[in-house]
Image (cartoon, rainbow, N blue to C red):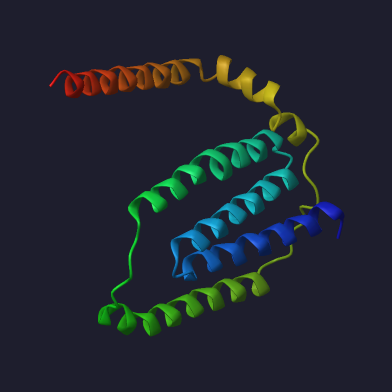
Length: 170
């Protein structure tokens, strides 16, 4: 096993662990922190696949900007004490049984499957994950969808300004 494969398994185990930790937290702030660490593990997975741009964008956009907004929303909501529901406690054993069953099926499929002959990424993989190649493909092969999305976003911004201005005039 080479270093990239070992790093992939470490980041994959970290991503699974932080995802499980995130959904099992009762408080929203520790869950958000677990989600941030999950984003960092996903970024490491992208790096092992030679997708440097996606790894950087994962950290900047999701772990940076989106999670800051999530934490601000959590703080603005000022969540109080939780009320305990009897329905949730009745469904928990069923959820555990389903989760363990699906996990057992996946492990069985992994153990009974054929060993892959795929050992390393092709040499072109480093080119595909680069900024230059992404820009070339985006502005040549996908120019029309790119421009259509930009017009859609422009229309959304104009609509938001019109709606906000209407509320200011009243």
